[in-house]
Length: 92
Image (cartoon, rainbow, N blue to C red; front, top):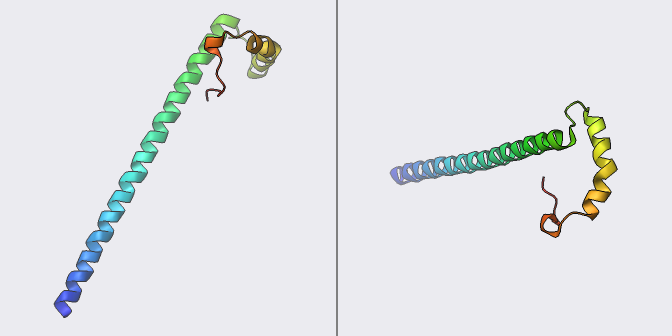
């Protein structure tokens, strides 16, 4: 009986280690995915910012001035945006 108890304890310990490894892999995978999403978003924001500076010649404007410029034209641009560029859900 003592030997059987030891086997059960060892089996339980192995199962616990396996669960911990799987949990770690899952957390690592989620971290990797969220990191990739953040990197993609950062890249997209940088590209859009570069286009804003290029087409609005806004490289000398502060963040506040750039926002003011965009607010000035936002209603007009959104009202006259071609259908192919309209999207109900904004991109992050």
